[in-house]
Structures are given as structure tokens and as C-alpha cells.
Length: 342
Ligand code: MRU
Image (cartoon, rainbow, N blue to C red; front, side, top):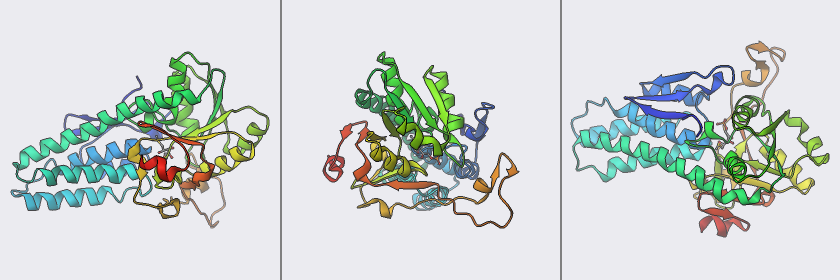
């Protein structure tokens, strides 16, 4: 069992500060919605399912001290809290999905005492965690069949335990395959600019005793050409109805490379990452981040002052480049318009 990434702890949101890994394993405790927002914005907590959990627990923290005496005023405050959390990051749909779930609980229980609604909101946030725990296991079980004994997988960013309530989405397949006795090797992209692959994925894989090799993102083509990997396996932040998939910047490039080298490209994600209200990936909002994430590295400036910077945090891989999408309900294959609906 991986360490819990984010949990409820006596009226506070307790989370691993992922910006400090792998040097230090430090927990932070958020007792205000502002600090949960800051943690999401600055990637102390990150990864689509974990963002859903942060949004749900952040809502509880934000509303638990409400002094409202009637439902209408309580609901207004709830909308302020959820509206605020919704501004933290735009791409991972799990964040918005969880906020909608929290509001729906209040709406369905409007006749109850406000103290009871607060209890039900906490219960719902804990359900989001429990459900994700089970989803990770089911994703792992459903997808492990795609990995054969002796395979080598290329990963990007971090879609492991740190990004979820259990042992991940993409990494769940690897962990499950390993539990089934298969010998698996992994090449992990470092994932510029914030190095989730180098800092987080390799940390998780090494702890699980998996043979792990770190590469820079721009080495993937050469690694594929040399025949070192059999498949690419990534997570997702938002999947449109046609299967187009937003994930960490650089994922699209990997999918193009995988096609060029005739290597399967798999996505693993819970259905809470689907956004079937969007026909295709062009409608997915792509987060742009601060220039300093590229111009500075570990507190040191690495590019000249005054240079222009473009820093999208995600890209969209077209469905036609995706071999299959593994979910907790099974494996979806093209045409995704039909299989995802099912
Ligand atoms: O910016 P991040 O670190 O939140 O981006 C995370 C990713 O892109 C992950 O691959 C995705 O959220 C899936 S996590 C199971």
C-alpha cells in the first residue's frame, strides 16, 4: 500500500507536499480553503484524481465553520467555496467533477439541518477517496493483461500513488503486473518543466522494487528507435467523448513517436476523468503556467532576462493515436465515441 497522498485529519486536509519530494517527505495540514487552493495551484497536490479529492476535502474545510442559519445562505457560501476552488487549475476535470458532487449532496439534502448537511459533505468527500482507491485497483486489474512478462514500459509525468488515493492509474497496471509475477522494466521521462517523472515516478517505482531507468523527455525517440520499450503508458487529465486525451505536456509528442515506431500507446484513467460534454479535445482548457517554471530551475535562473516564454502544462493526444484506454470498468478501444459511452 502506498502512503496516503491526501486525507482528512481531524478537521484539516493532510497531504504530502509533493514539491519537496524526493528530498523530503513532508506533510502539510490545510485548515482553510485558501491553503488548499494554494496547494493545488502550486502542485503540492497534483494528478487528476488527487485534485478531485483535494477539491472535495477543500470544500469541507471551506464550509465547516459556516455560520449560516438557513439553507439559502449556506448554499450561497458553498457556491463561493466551490467557485473559488474551481479557479485553482483548469484542465483536470476531476476537480470540477468533485465540486459538482459536493454541491449535489447539499442540494439533495436541503431539508436537513445544516449540521447534518456538513456531516454529509464530509461523508461524500470520504466517498470520493474510497471510490478512487477501488478504481485504482480495478484499473490495475483490468489493464495488467496488456503487459507481458519481460515488457519495458515508457511513462510520462506521474500517474502513480501520489496522483491518486491508492497506487495510481498508469502505474497501477505496472504494479499489478508485477504482483502477478511478471518482470517489468520502466523508462520514466523526467517530464519538463516540473520533473514529476524524475522526482515522483522514479521515487514510487524504486520503492516498489521496479527496474527503473530515468531519461530526459527528448531521449524518447532514440529509446524507441533502439527498441528499448514495448509500449507507452500514461495517465490523463481529461478525456473528451471522442477519446481525445489531455495529459501532461509532452504526451502528444510521445504518441506521435509511438505511432512512428509501431509501439502501442495506452492511456489509463478512471471514468471521473471523462468529460463526455466535450465532443473533442479542442474544447479542453489547457492550463498555461508561469514563465519562471521554464526560465528558472531549482531557484537558479537558466534563461536570459527578457526572453519570451510559452508554458502550456498539458497537451491533447488525438484519439487516433491511442491504442486503448483502460478504466475501472474495462478497456475501451476505438472507435471511442461508442466504447466510452458504454
Ligand atoms: O500537472 P500535474 O502534475 O497535475 O499533471 C499530472 C498529469 O498529467 C497526470 O498524468 C494525470 O493527472 C494523471 S494522474 C493519475
